[in-house]
Image (tube, rainbow, N blue to C red; front, side):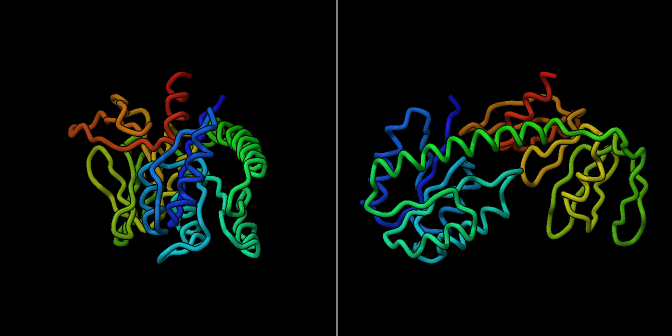
Length: 252
């Protein structure tokens, strides 16, 4: 049975406690910390990366819909599943406009809740298969050299010389054996150009050359850190979502 990491975003204490009670009865659900505002939800998502979020449409400050849009932009590979909770049936349209898996009306009905859980498990099973296929996808036509524009010059770079890349101050920092090269390309653009080499997104903000990984160590809440073989023994984060695929790649 696959474990489901769930998060609740609800500013009403009674509704929050009701949802906690329902989820705690599910044997395959692990509860992450709950949020009471949209801004808090975004911060907690980054820290815990839940598989599914039960969120109220209306919350203080940032609304549930606004929070979802931010989380989708932050998500690694696949955003979490969203279940809208509301006391008003008309808000169901908001849920479907952002492709939420389902919505639940307050007060919660156990039969309706179980229907939602079945949808979640089915969707997670389908998503898991897509992610595994994505992780296995490689291309045989890999470039021997890259041409990187740093704004002042065109740098010829061997992919094998790259340790990792990370966005910083609207630029992309490419850390190599000899120097740090800045470029206006995005991390996704660099990742696309490096297909066929041993590069992997260990986190939404880090693209790492797996040939230079020295060790992988547990951190907290299912996340890991990895240490590189560079002279500084640089430590980089591995998100919980990326952990499974990373460990599988080293097993093969």
